[in-house]
Length: 314
Ligand SMILES: C[S@@+](CC[C@H](N)C(=O)[O-])C[C@H]1O[C@@H](n2cnc3c(N)ncnc32)[C@H](O)[C@@H]1O
Image (cartoon, rainbow, N blue to C red; front, side, top):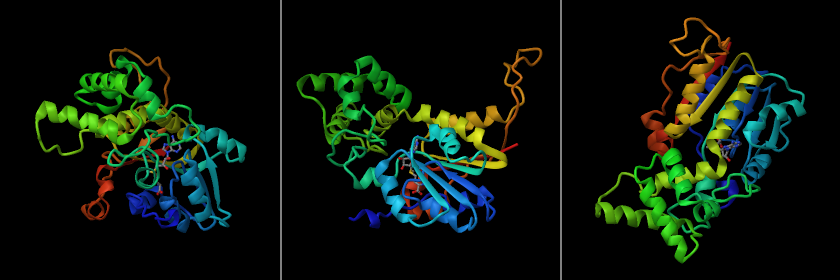
């Protein structure tokens, strides 16, 4: 399939545009522009505005560059969103009206490229969103110690069998370096099969381990925290921050960030008086995260775990 025919369906599209509360002049940052699905819809609502799009994936950005070629409202940057403040400084933009972060991987990365994210295909173990990064999944799997593997499987995958799978990997790589996604996936499936017999699992047993390795390779949780801090710095008063996450670890970070930044004091509850001098910067607009409708999930099964949280700068 040609890249210009990629079937990418942006999640929670109408909800995103609605919650952004745009006006024709709005200046919007799409911090994870991917294939530009959300941005295309946002642009319909900001005829006299600006859209600054970031993505750390050069291939996604190449595609999106062609998609928006000639649109003078659009500026694209290959960058991690943790560098948002620097990017905006470079183009002399101090404040923006909305920031969207649609975190995770795109269907483009998962399905159509030899990018090593998919455990259903034989691909080189890569998983780098930014392909200029030095460390790929192959290095993590083959060079991390047993303890390091166990720790990332536990912390980033919440994998209940972190220790046993880390052990299996360290044994297997003594015989042969693990270089393909399907080799790693099969090793995990074999472990589950041996341990639990031919149980039908709701999801592939390799899911959590792949998630953990991907988070480690791309340092996703650290970037998310930095991206949230940066967004807060660049939003103007009444500006909106929208974050879509696909798994609970990320959603927890977003929820906690919103909670902390919406409080005037974050001292421990036993303190008799405030010593932190923290000030609230945000008002949480979605008490509970917005989930896709049944209709949306029926049309796009990948949307099923998406959760949108929205906050407004005070
Ligand atoms: C779910 S896709 C976004 C899809 C996009 N909203 C659309 O409608 O086409 C996530 C994108 O975010 C990018 N990404 C993830 N983490 C990033 C980060 N820390 N900095 C910049 N881009 C990131 C990925 O490379 C990927 O292209």
